[in-house]
Each structure stands twice: as structure tokens, then as C-alpha cells.
Length: 357
Image (cartoon, rainbow, N blue to C red; front, top):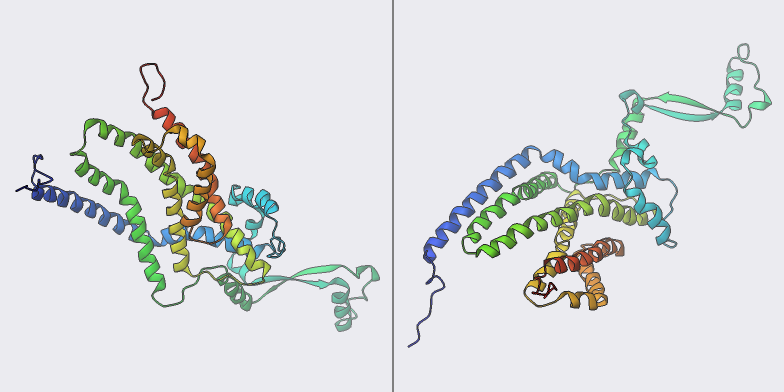
């Protein structure tokens, strides 16, 4: 009768010993995660403000700009692309539409507003009240105006109410606390991820051959760089551009955008994560080349099919249905596709004649 061969018959450790080693490394990984989460909880408010920056800046830009340029009926993509996208890479300190919104006001300035009155009517009213002191106004004053500062405590209340329009909102009493905890946990997981991957790597490396460990040492740092590059590209370039595009429809339809903080946090975490994953495309192409599923010649010959596949993947990975987010993911993926072809050529083994095999 045939006997079943155990997976660990040829191993120096038993199955139970493997589980014990795995438990050891998992406990170390969880301890590192706990420390990172505690540190993130201490700086939770600063982390929430950091994640809020794109939506706060987009709401200020939407309310500061008085003229609606991107109407729903007449949206011009090329006009927006040449002015909107280019503007995202200009530092906020030099962007004209953000200067007035970002300049802090003193307590006295918050209680003060300037009103414009007709110079002719103003002097005429003074002449009516005190004719012996103020003569009749001259005709040359007609059409001219005076800026008069008016101060009242009520104006500060009006400013405070107006500023709340530019802030994300919560719809229940526990939402702010749950958002705080969610951001802290996700930030702790991101901070602890190198330590967690290192512990898992220590467990897996014991069963790899030396040449397999060499591949991991070479391509794991590259994978981390690509992931962080995708996250940074999304947070600093894609999110401001996409938010301006989406909020322009609120302006076109004369709607007031009130962003729910929990929904924004989910969006602001999901979209960079999808970009980080999609930026692994060159390494995925290299892996398929290494296991002889595709060759470099296939990647070059089937580039049209690859463009279609990248468009479909971008549509699936982006959490919003708007075409702008899909295009913002698709464009760098096309560049990374070319990088993947170059990486496959560079890592291809050479034949005795010096040509790639």
C-alpha cells in the first residue's frame, strides 16, 4: 500500500518545530507593530492633519476662485491639463489662489471687515448732519469710493461659521475618535512594515538556496522604492489634481462640498495603496520573464495589448469612477512598462556568444 510522504520528511526540523519558529517571528513582528501603533497614537492629530492637507487645500482653492472655469457643460480637458496639472507642482507658498486663504488673521483682523461706500454720498450725509463742519461734496467725487474698516465681535462669529465650510465634517459623535484610531493604526502598520517584512524574511530565508536569497536582496529594496514612489506620486501629484477636477463640478452646478472625514480618510488611504501596488509592474514583468511565461520579445511585440491591459487595470484599481484618476494612474504605468522591458533585458542571462538567452 502506498504511503503518503510528509512535506517535512527531508527537513532538519519537524512540522511542529517549524510552527514554533514561525510563532517566534510572528510575536516579534506583532511587538514591533504594537510599538509603532503606540507612537502613532501619540502623534495621531498631526497624522490626521497631514492626510487632510490635500482635501483642505482643494476646498480652499475651490472657494477662493470666484470665476468658474470648469463648467459641467463646457469642460475643456486641454485647458485644464495645461493649467491645472502644471499648477499642482508649484509650491503652495507661491500659488496666488492660496495666498489669501493661507495667511493667518490676528484676533483684531477677525473682528474687522472693510466696506466700500460712495465718497459723494458719504460726504453728502456728513454735510446733512453737520453742515457747518462739512461743505457740500463736489461733483468730481461721484463714482469714487472709500474703504472704511468696520469692527464688531459679530464679524468674528461670521468668519468662524464661514471657515467651517472649508473643513471636512463628521456625522456622528464617535466618527472623529474612530478616524483618529484608524489613521493611527494604519500609520503604525506602515511604519512597522519594514520590521514585519524582515521577521517574515528571517523565517522564509532559512529554506531558500543562496542564489534565491540573492534575488531577494536585489529586488526587495527595488520593490520598496517603487511602492513608496507610487504612494508619494499619488499623494503629492494625483490627489490635488483629481480633487480639483472633481470639485470643479461642484462649482459648475453651484453646490457646496461638505466632505465626510471618514470617507476622505478611506479614499486617501486606498488610492495611494493602489498606486503603490500598481507601481510593482516592472518587477511583475521581470518575474514572468524569469519563470519563462513571457520573454522580452513578447513584451515588445504585444505593446498594444499591454496598453489596453494597463487601461483596464487602472480602471479597476482606482476607487473612483472618474476618468481623470484612471488617466493619472495609466500614464506612469506606461512609463513603468518600458522600464520593465529594460529591466528584463538587463537581467537576462547571457549565452556563450554574449547574447541574451
